[in-house]
Length: 166
Image (tube, rainbow, N blue to C red):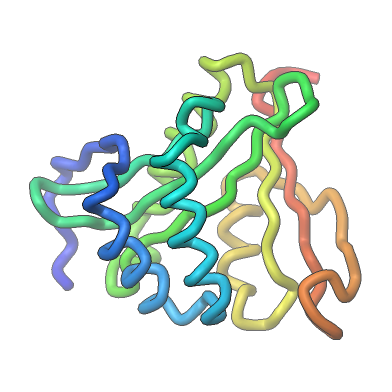
């Protein structure tokens, strides 16, 4: 797909976006079938009640074209700790700066809401090398590795970035 002009905007997710976003996530090839199913449940829960608990979900769009989305929330029972749960860019637009644009918006918004640190989890599998490099590029540091978390040989990699001076 041709890179859209720089008329991007982040808009709150609506229930009518769910099917398209689940398809978008699936088409990236990064997510297992049960993860794509979980995304639908996460988005349904967000619209049903989690938006009340300060969960945030935004669509990156250019006019009517859906380019990507993010889902993030404050971590329960913490002070100023936020977690990025989902960041997805349409498959044929990856590597063009859209994910970075969304990530910067997440950081800015979390900071405005009293966030002091943002955590992101991903897999250790080789296909996630670009994802891990992406987080490093934007100043995240590997904070923890939980061996065998997702499956045997598939570790959880936890990245951390301070949003305020420490």
